[in-house]
Length: 84
Image (spheres, rainbow, N blue to C red):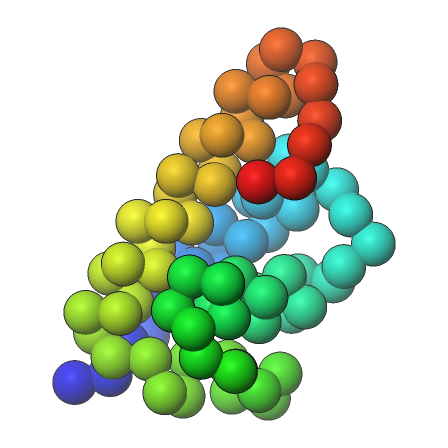
């Protein structure tokens, strides 16, 4: 099957959390597309970013996004900033 609605909602939650922790000029949508490209290797569309992501790819994607958020949280706690 494809990435579930629950997985997609959690992915957006993590992206917005990442945007709060590590602000950039990129919009949340641009960050989502960039993360999909980097983590899964799929060129996602802005209209339907999860259209071609399988359930298993979704699991990998969420695990990696959680790692990014954890890293950004640690950097914020140290008072530093950087790309993840």
